[in-house]
Length: 186
Ligand SMILES: [Zn+2]
Ligand SMILES: [Zn+2]
Image 1 (cartoon, rainbow, N blue to C red):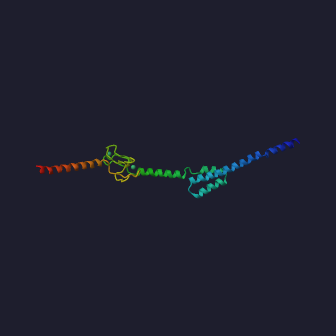
Image 2: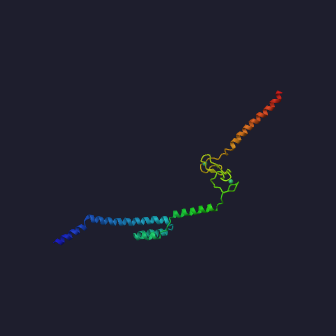
């Protein structure tokens, strides 16, 4: 009589709703974790592998072999993503181009210079004029600044020369007028 009541109470505890709820929750979490892992694997393999067949096999592995599939995938996945591989290739190519391209030299003293230099640091020869809008160094042949689209005007050193020319011309004309009036007066 006493034992049957104990069994009954144990049976009742095991099948009570909190236990059922906890069990269902555990199963639900396991399924969510399994599907989440499979989805993460699919996204990760697409970032690392270009071959669609390998992407499909990895996605299948994540679905067909719960949890263990992700572990196997982690052991064999490529160490770099496709974007990282592309960035590395671009970096290497830029480095190669920089090494192959001949170094720029000062036309006067032939010491090495950089594309951003305005003057030669060794002999102080003017190599480039700065943009009047953004101060970027401009190559002599450029008609427009490639950084801010400001048209390149003639260097400011020419303007005082033009002023001097005007002054010289007016001086010349006034001087030529003076001798013409002098003989008329005498
Ligand atoms: Zn120089
Ligand atoms: Zn500019």
